[in-house]
Length: 326
Image (cartoon, rainbow, N blue to C red; front, side, top):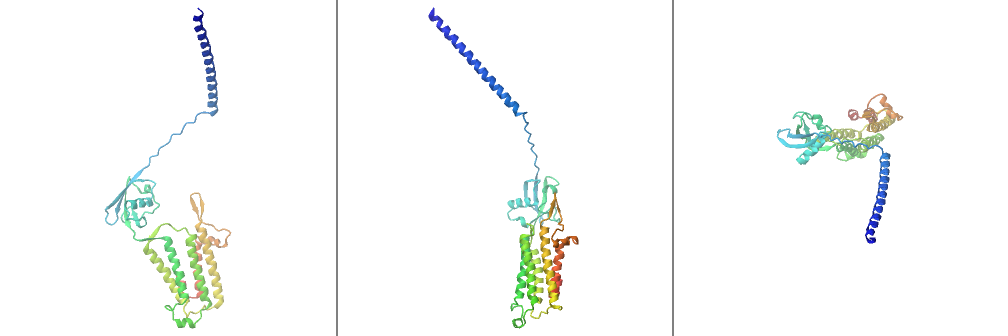
């Protein structure tokens, strides 16, 4: 009998142990649940994740034809609506490497104007298919190259005439006649004028990144270099006659020339840094600099100062070609 009661005692012990374990587990669960509830309440209400809107991007198909033969050159697909004519030229060059972006002119019609690089495809598209006509503009040069060539030539050409090289003037006549002081002053003023041009082209003016046909470079250089040769020939000639009113005429004109050159420089600096209000650029207004007070009289004082410089140079040297150049 005693041996049979042992299993019952052990079973009771096991039951008591399991009941205690269950109580501890329930207490831990209640504590964990209570802690989790406090954590959720302290975190505040759940924020809804905003739905991501997928905008539909419109693509265009651009057909490029030769403006002369009107034959199809290529088709550019998957061109976005925000793409510009510049982007189209780049893709056109990748599809047809022989068509360089700087030499390509794109038109909506064969006889129409060339489209600017900043124009977007969306602004000219009437449907999903856009037809453009391509024209080879010929050899192109950058605008910076054009301006540097225009201004470097006169600087060097004038110095050649100032040195009175034998191939231009008679060597014996040049050696026999000494230069008048106004000749040296004219060379100094002329060099200042074009050195200022060169420095402003490199450091002041915001030159467009575009290109222009080579013929424009030739035309501009012919004008600047030709007039410089005409001016320099008479001023540096051995038979040059000094101004009629002597030093007074030379001094007043030279001072006025330097004032106009300084005014031209300050105005160009102001024009290169316009005041911006919102999306609009405001025209410069006069400030504490006296050279900017010319804005009270004219809208573009740089041209006024430019004309004043050449008029002063003409009066100082008393030569007709200077006046015609101005």
